[in-house]
Length: 283
Length: 284
Image (cartoon, rainbow over all chains, first blue to last red; front, side, top):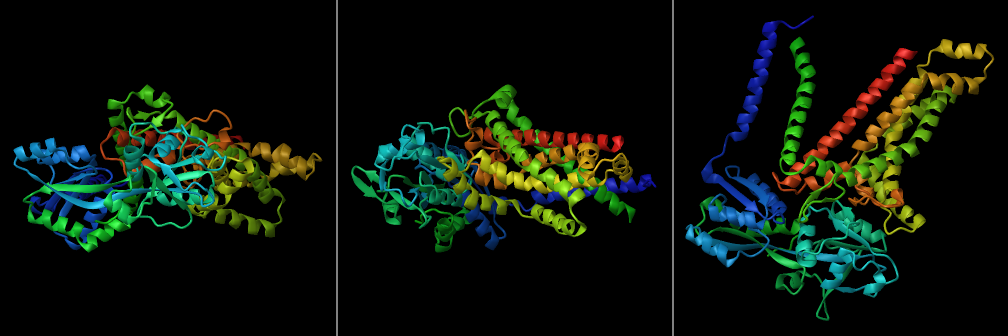
C-alpha cells in the first residue's frame, strides 16, 4: 500500500521544518558582547579548546570560538581585529606590535603555559644524554645506530607522533630546524603508545610532552655544552632545558569584560590545572 | 503509524545521502589546490613539510598489504572452520562453536589492538630481530582474527544451504562423505564462500583502531620484506591526523579525499560481494 500523496507532502514539510530548525538552532545565541573569538597556534589549540570548554560549562552566557591557523595567522587576525585573543607559540615580533598599535589595538602579552619535550629510551639503554645535534641526526636518519652516540651496537628505532601533534610540531621547530625527518619513523597516535612501544623496545627512542611522569622508560638528559639538563619543571620554567618554550596569548590591553574574565580564568589555579592535565607546564 | 516506519526507512537513505554530499564536497575542495594525478600517483605522504605532499600510494600500499596478509591468514582457517561446523561437527560441538564465533566478532577492536601491542608486537620483534614489532604482519594477524567471524559465518551459511538432493545424489552415486564435501558441497557453495572472503576483506580494509595500534604507521612503500616493515593504512592516516589538523587547510581536505577513496573501495567491495552472492542464488 502506498502512502497518500498528502501525507507524503506533509512529511516532506515536516522534515524540512526539522532541518531548518536544527540549522537555525546552531545560529542562535550568538551575542557579540559575550562572544570571544580566538585563533592562532595549533600547539595552543588543544589547550585553548579544553580551557574554553571548561569555562563555558560554568559561564553559559559566554561563547568562545576557537580556531587554529598557526601563530602567525593568529597574530595577523589580532592586528586586523578579527579575533579577540591570538594564540601563539612564539613571542610577538616588534613589527607586529607596531602594526597592532597603529590600528589602535596595542597587544598585551600573557604567558599561559610552558611546553617542553622529554626524550625517552628503553630502561636498559645506557645512553644517558644526547646533544641537540645528535637528536637532530637521529631523527633525520644520519645517525642510525646507538653505538654512534655511546650506546650498544643496535639499530635505532625512531618513534614519533603523527604530524598533527603539537609535540611533534614543536620538536620539528626546536630540534629539526628545517632538516627533514627520516621517512621511516614509527608513528604513534598518542603519547601513551609512544611510551608503551619505548618501554618494550630496547632499540627505541621516543619523544613525549614534558609534563608526563613515566617510570617505565628512561628519560635522557639533553647535553647543553657539556652539562646534562633534565626536563624538570624548574629547568623548563627557567628556559635552561633547550626543548622548551613559553606559550602565549595576546589580547587587547583594554579587553572587554568577557575577555579579561576568561584570561583571569586561564591564569587561575583552576585554569592552570587544565594546563597541567593536558601535559604542559603551568605558569 | 505507517509514516513513522516511512521516516525510519528513508532516514537511513537521507543520512547516507548527507554523508556522501558532505564527504565529496569537502574532498572536492582538495582538488582545487592539489592535482588529482599528484594525489593518486604520489609516492610520498608528508603533511606539515615544505612543500606538503599528499601522495596516496604509500597509504594504499599499507592498506593492501595488511588486508592481503589478513586474508591469507584468515581464509584457510575460516573456510576449514566453516566446513567443520556445517558438515562434520556433531550437533553439540556445532552448538558450542557457532556462538563462540559470534563472541569473537564481539570483541572490540581496541581490545584486540591492545592485545596485539602487548603480546604480538614484542614476539614479532624478537622472532624476526626487527627494529620494531609494529609491522604489516602484526596488523595482518590482528585483522585476520577480526575477519574470521565474517568468513566463518557467511561460508557456513552458504555450505548449509546447499540443497539436500545434491548431497543425496552424490551419496547415491557411491561417493563417501569426504568426496561429497569437496566434489559437490564446496563447488555448490563456492559463490557464497567467495562472498564471505570478499566481505572479510571489506571488514579488514575499514578497520582502524587495532591496525593503528600495531602497524607502526610509517607512510612509506617498503622496498623488501613487505610484511616485516611498518606500514600506514588509509584508515590509520585519517584517525592519526584528523584530531588536530586545522580546519579548512589543504591537509584537512586531503584527509577527506583519502576518506572518499576508502568509501569508494568499501562500496565496490560490497557491490562485488552482492553480485557474487546473487550468482550463487541463481545457480542452485
